[in-house]
Image (cartoon, rainbow, N blue to C red):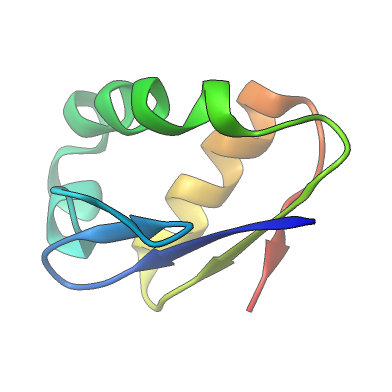
Length: 78
């Protein structure tokens, strides 16, 4: 089983669930929005499941690295 996080301009999807922060929010205000994003997704990620992040720009890298720090493991980029 896998988890997919897709970063769009104005929102993120996590396994099909819409989170109301997007690429612009992450790149401009990441210290403000990442805690809210993580509050929504971290408890749903199981240790044995891979996490894939798709999207473009700095937002993908920012979210991916912070998520890796939080999970203590590598995430995959698409």
